[in-house]
Amino acid sequence: MTDRVNATLTRFQTTAENNALGLSAAAQTELNALLPAGQRLLGTGDYRDQSTSGWEFELQSNLTRQRTVRATYSVNRVIFGRFFPLVRPYLASARTAAQAQGLNPTTPPVSPSNSSTIPRAPSAPSAARPPT
Image (cartoon, rainbow, N blue to C red; front, side, top):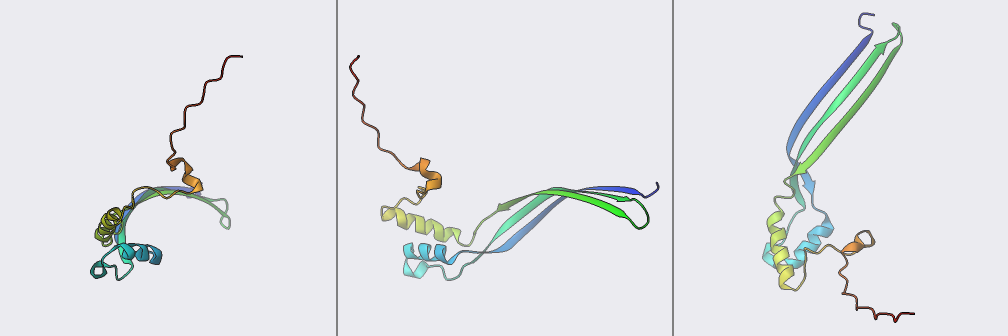
């Protein structure tokens, strides 16, 4: 049974900095609508950082010289960080401009998936029913 069963367990961790990331044209248009003419975004390129860690397991069995069975499993976790560092100052300026126009950019948009965030008016107290 020598060398008929092999198992490998590997732990990995990587960090990638300055991965290219593009701002969508719709987001660029929305931000530029709020920014003064001399401070508008000219491109959509930006970047972010990415950290990945995880485990890999491999089990290999040589049943005969011509037959091999192999099973593998892997799990990983990716964490993105430092999103849009080039756009961030433009976003702060656009938020200030939106608030000056009476808009509140910190309130999430209302959609069926987040309908619980819809502000509701206080309900009127119901009239008490007389006892029957």
